[in-house]
Image (cartoon, rainbow, N blue to C red; front, side):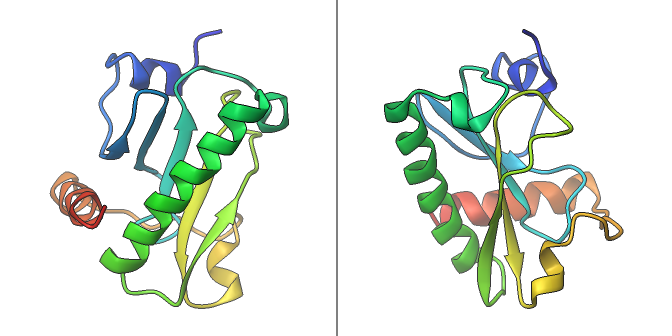
Amino acid sequence: MSTIFSKIVAGEIPCYKVAETQDYLAFLDVRPLTAGHTLVIPKVATDYVFDIQDEAYAGLFLFAKIVAKAIKQAVPCTKVGVAVIGLEVPHAHIHLVPMNAVGDLNFEKARVEFTPEEYTAIAAKIATSI
């Protein structure tokens, strides 16, 4: 199954990469709730996060933990919220969202916009915090 995320993994679509390992990739959401909103994915596409094999599932969340700590260092926030929704893209992914209030994790609110230069700067700041 080819998804927008598998195309990003294959290099067919660009992204604002934050971190990468052999098995996982983290990149900025291009429709973010807030600055630093990052998506963490396994490189092997599985539609539903709870269908991922146990070892890969644990690895995904451990990788997300590393990325979340870097986000917390790079983006002013109280905490980094975690959400697994999986309705828009049939490729398991974790949302890491810098937040200062519970409402910051509301996916029904208006998305913020950044210029390509701003996205690049945010991604670089998070990446250097890893």
